[in-house]
Image (cartoon, rainbow, N blue to C red):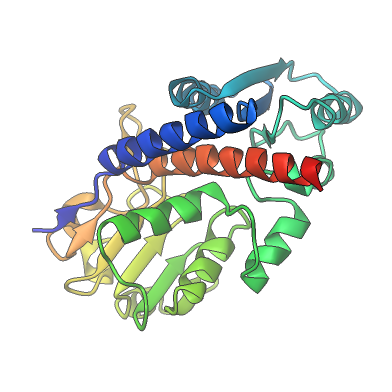
Length: 287
């Protein structure tokens, strides 16, 4: 039976440490780390994520605001709001909740967030720095996965790592972080031939493809570590990941559940990035 990688438990411990360090930083500098989350429209899943982010900030003792904009907001209006937040000294991190309504260009919006306040690490400057291994911020989900592996003493070095999914948000940066940790990395996607043959080679398998229960037990090597980044809702309303837990869990040595696995770690990294941004802002002021 696989060891369950309990993201909630790990996140609670890491967040307590972030809150302690944030309070210490505020005492020393008089600066409270601040995060602004911008949401456009009323996507129910996005609203849940935003609420969870706000609650996490409050528990960590951070300053936090949520900017809610109607679905009909123009790109210009959104860019104007980002300009305001860019110039607000109380705000060290800015996050725009994705997906955006179809009439708004996502790339233009992400480019408008200053790299030093880009706590999602989606700006082209930050993605380039991640490629080079010289970064201030890491994308929240891949960094959360790495923190969970570290917490469970799962060494990536020398391991065969397979990432299923090549999105800019998870798949590509996940591959880079595993590579920086000296893993041997293969990235799979919808055009990969003989996918099961590739996934069966993995010592560490990270799945972020957005298809419910897509990876089944016959696609997993005995004793593999399986990280499920997926979050899908079944017809009965229950949440499930991209991994068929029932068939994969007996073969894995360790596995993340959905919910309660990677999700809590993502928000934990967001808090870490916000604290880092606040520290960098104070440092830049002194220079």
